[in-house]
Image 1: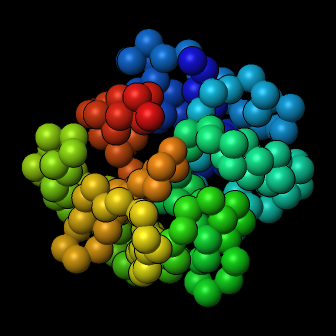
Image 2: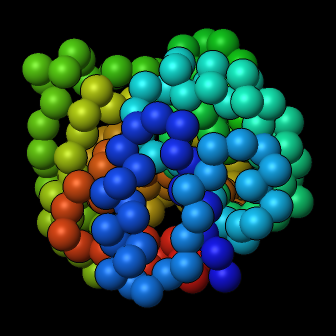
Length: 185
């Protein structure tokens, strides 16, 4: 199994640290042909508008949508969850692979970024350090989307079949439990 890590922009080096720790084979993906080399994909945090423009500029949007449609597991973190969403801020999402609506920067500006405990029963983590950095808020979900964790009333770790998303940054902690889970999808 080869894990792809979208390396156009964002926090992908922290994912590399966890993947190495788990002895996972990985590739940093920067163009559409490289998508053929991978079995699953992590879309890291970063700036969703910039990442979306890079996906379009490098002609990766349609091939990526097709791979996800055919069942490739994918995990979107923060900005990655925005790219995966069906709608973001009321507009159609870039990839549209996750039947949810999100609001960008829902918790405020960079200065409002915070660490909050997240109870993740699925992963046996009652107080995982959720690092929310200009995080999106999942404002609605369609039938079939599972909520694996909440912060307050907000879903922050969701899954719809082979597509998962976290609105916070598990890769910025020392705990690889989210990466382990993704490798088992």
